[in-house]
Every structure is written in structure tokens, then in C-alpha cells.
Image (tube, rainbow, N blue to C red):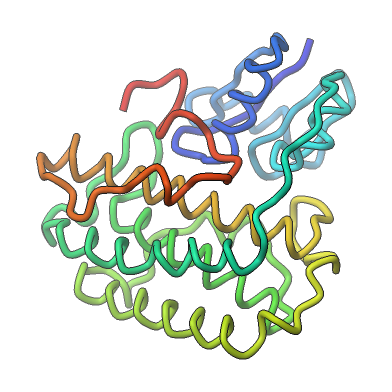
Amino acid sequence: MLTVYWQPGCSSCLNLKEHLTRYGVAFESVNVRENAEGFEALAKLGVRQVPVLVKGDQWCDGQMIAQVNNLAGIEASRSEMLGPLELSGRMTDYLPVLKAYVTQIPADRFGEMLPGRPRSYGSLACHIAEIIDLFLRVTQDKYSLVFTDYEHPLPVEYSSPEKLTHYISFVSDRLSNWVENELAGLDFKAIASVYYGEPTVHEFMERTAWHAGQHLRQIELVLQDKLGKIPEPRLSEALFSGLPMPRLVWDDQLIF
């Protein structure tokens, strides 16, 4: 029997569960936020992150779909990835939308928590900008990505909507400069230095694009379902076309 260890609101966790379900693969589902034994089981395997797919004494990081297929016995080929210029265009388009969404979150509700997950609305919004910023740090600064880069409280310097918009503008400017001056010369077949495996820079860039996009969908959901607002602007399907994103926005087992 396969076991999936996951947590609510985790884009890669949902993607893994949807992938297995799509191919008719049965699995036990363990939400590590509700089941303390889940983290204990992972610790015995020497694993400190989710999503993780386990089969007996074998496991793989759920973010590496090729490894998931091998462990689950799935025979599947994936569609061609969008090119780097298209992927950078998607990320460029996300950031002004994110900035607009942040300004629509009331300051007194910025620290309100998401359902089933110790992450605030402000932390989620900041996380989206960080995902893109961390991609640039890995490719520009030779930084090695670690799991805790994606799992931390909202930094005090971004603790209000106004403060966070400055960081989003910084990331937007940095991305624009990278596209203009470095994208054309980057080796996209090189291996990216990340904690979850050995993806190429192109694969890491694709994951950055859909990872940030999925969380942007979640912020739109927060505005609409938690804050009772009409998100402006609304997200279009075209913004995510060609990206291997989950079908659902929050989770397949928990109601948002």
C-alpha cells in the first residue's frame, strides 16, 4: 500500500494526490497537521518535508513526478514544458495581480490563519513573492534551496499589506532585470540546487511558475470566500494554460 504524507494548502501535496487519483492508484492519506504520527513516520525515514510518497521502506519526494511514477507503477509521459520566456512571462504577470490582492486584504485581518494550516493570509501572499525571489536566488546567486525557505512565519518587515507591497515591487524589478540581462544566457539543462531532488533549471522554473500560480489562486479564494470581496483583477484560465497545476485550489479532502 502506498501512503501520501501531506498538509493542507500545500500545492505539491494536492498535485500529488490528484496525480495518483487520476491514474487510479490507491493510497493511504495522512495529513501531518492532524496526525502527529505522520511526522514521526517520516522522521524514521530521515525525511523532514512533505509531500512524500511511501511504499514499504521506499519513498520519494512527491514533487518529483517521474520518481512518483516509478514508485507507484504509473506509466505516463508528460506534455512538453513551456519555454523559459513564456514561464518568465507568467511570473511577471502574477506579481502586479498579487500586489493588487494584497492591498485588498484589511490590515487587521492580515494575520488571520488559513484553515487547517498554521499560515496566515499575509504569509501566503508573501510566500508567492518569495517563491519567485528564491528561484532568482538559486539561478543568480548560486543559492541552495532548503525546505524551511518555504515554511516560516511572515517576516516582521512584511507584516502589513503596505510593507509587503514594497517587497513584491522589489521582486518584480529583480525578475524584470533577470529576464532582460540573464535569461538568454542561462543553461536550462543544468541541475538546480534544490532540496527535493535534481530537477533541471527548466524544470525548477516550471515548478516555480505553477507553484506561485497555485498560491495566487488561493489568495483569490481568500478574498472571495473569507473576506467577502470581489477580487480585482480576476484570474483568467489563460494565465495558467500549459502549466501542470492541480485542478482544485485548496485541497481534495478539506473544505476551504
